[in-house]
Length: 324
Image (cartoon, rainbow, N blue to C red; front, top):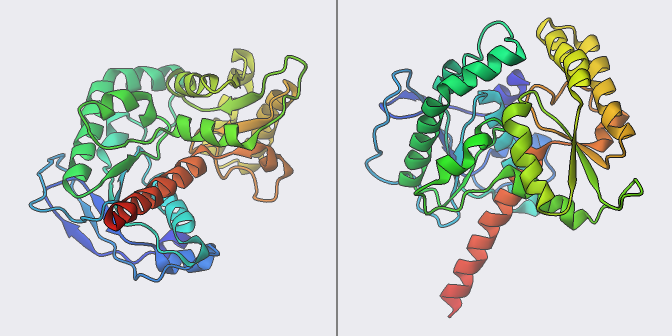
């Protein structure tokens, strides 16, 4: 996947005294090979890196359009790049131009959470995240401020784990800040799903490798729209999902696939309509033609679509104001 992204994205590298960021109107070359839509604008992309952790304010706004999207990069750089591809696909559909965006991505997050190196146990991972969460929140707030000062007019954060602190990050910010849970709940509501079981309520399964941090906000957001969120029981999580991640770390792809299929089937047997794969680790494990994927959702797809919808709405509102 990284090789494909590198071939499709032209980058210029600079070292600056502020968080790493990407700016661009559209990944046109990449979009032409992967999406039906076509962007008319040329690729304008910049990547800078800073290992020092310093956050200097930009002298002037990088972008000034009212529909500029600010993307707060999460723990994984790859997941951030994949989200940008989703933005490009949805933003350039039907011959449109993808809205402008500015992205802040920082390797310090994965260092703070100690997610590099050997796969930690669930207990150790939980303890590390809790220990460093104040630093994580401050890091994400700095990214938010940087994006706002750089011209962003709305924010999105393509990281399931970071959404655990969405409320803390959005404090004292006047910008619209989309929440992936709300985006998923809205799309499910619009889909008008029918209950499978006799209780008369639509059930949505949830698979995540960070259930202590991720499950609660998905439950809250989906339950507010009338859905029931179904999680794996502790025994299945311990004996199926965790070993699946361990197999993936050992590069035992077939073993990881078989265990993930079992986890999905366990939820489907409990009469869920769909299963949310709320973890970067779980995405891409199953082959693209696996029938089970028809019952699975990548929540970041909903976030990308909602982000583009927000940007297009801003343009329409501005056009109406100009007309009057």
